[in-house]
Image (cartoon, rainbow, N blue to C red):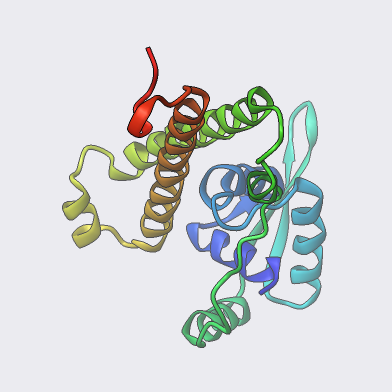
Length: 195
């Protein structure tokens, strides 16, 4: 899949500037499709050139002219075809951190611990951000009410996947830290910790 469909899906929320889209990606889509602002701006130009989105300019006082992008009918149609097509294969995880964990035996335990603590903090930070977005989406409703009544549930469901992913990352890191602590404690008879 390309960035193209992520941008088209983000524009389902309505007209947006490139800056606004970069914020949407940072908050709502980063859990499954990260993109830099430069990548977004290049993709917006391509999509406009292909007729899948249209751009309009809005003059602003004391600021540069703003370009706002919106889906065209052709963009909606192409996104619909993409959304209904079978997914080719599940995503494979490619994570440098996990390779480091695979090779951790024989490495300074303090260095490993620092890496795991950093990953845990990162996961908890993302989780807190996703929870704030969740509260904003729910807007005082229960999850069940939102899923039953909202015009669009896709953004909420993908956010829920990100929340689950980061909760599990944090839980896994806590388990690794426990294992590191247990391995640091010298064992006495029958595997019991000494002292």
